[in-house]
Length: 218
Image 1 (cartoon, one colour):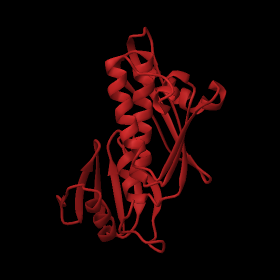
Image 2 (image 1 turned 45 degrees about the horizontal axis):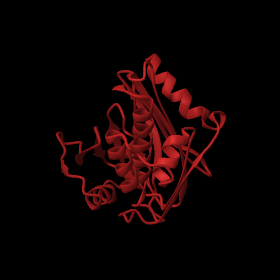
Image 3 (image 1 turned 45 degrees about the vertical axis):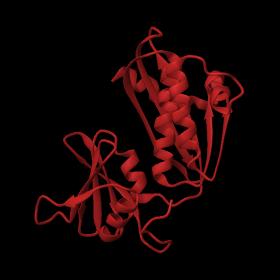
Image 4 (image 1 turned 90 degrees about the vertical axis):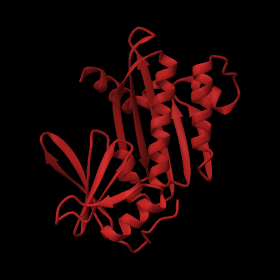
């Protein structure tokens, strides 16, 4: 992804807490941040107060720019943070989804990792779904976040052999809902310069599984 931040544009991520919600804070040039969002097709509006430089909403979160920083608000700010702070390179995505009842109440978990450690992670309930539908939803969410971060190469790892082989094209996807989700995954993955997906044991996917179960327990 091309953007307005060059290699020497300072971007530093921290967090603020308000009303029991953690709000990521990106220390950056708000003008460059605005250009980056606009280049990604995000609508940017003027601020609501004299202190706000601008506001922008993307994927359910809102970025508010002040002098020297951008604060991101919302239950799931990961994709918007990715657009503001992404810089290319390679990442690994771990994903997991599950249903209690199959179909029944379902949740997802995903973790995005680079050589420097965890870049972003998340877990959430997604309503009623089957296990396989939840697996696909976890994969879609994780790949969307990776795309917003602007990574060039994505290595995807999951413990569902069915999903991995369907996405690769090794197994057919006959169920209409899963077929639609597979097409969405491939559409997203084709946006990267290179990508791969592989099946791993559950213990390798432990953090994504942990986030899934935490979402169930909330």
